[in-house]
Amino acid sequence: MNRHLAVSLQRLGVVCTSPTRTFSKETKVLDLPRHHGIDVMRDPGTNKGTAFLLHERQLLGIHGLLPPAVLTMDQQVEKMMTNLAKLSDDLQRYSFLTSLQDRNERLFYKLIIQNVEYCMPLIYTPTVGLACQFYGYVFRRPS
Image (tube, rainbow, N blue to C red):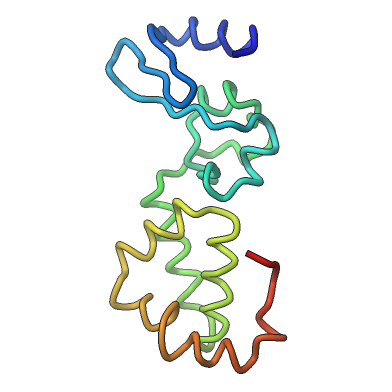
């Protein structure tokens, strides 16, 4: 663990660390991703969008990389559902959801779980069949 990170954890009152998790005095668990800085934002598995709290942003070196507002995951889901509803067809909605999955897996799965009935037809049949037919138009990047 680098010295800067160790000092930051000490200021936060961390008492025990392991390679994957850090346990604080308030018995809250703070995940420590493998990445730091912009790499946290580029990894869809660690990216939480604007849900990073101020101390997490400072600790991970992403403070200036995000808008100053902190939104909960539920608030982000609400915004994504509003944007999803504005799209005109299911193929656009499918593309929107796969793009979200490429950027922020946590938000993607939370959105799917909270809106299963609405989202399943978009990420499964029949929309995936349509996406296969128009693969050249929908393709973004290899998985």
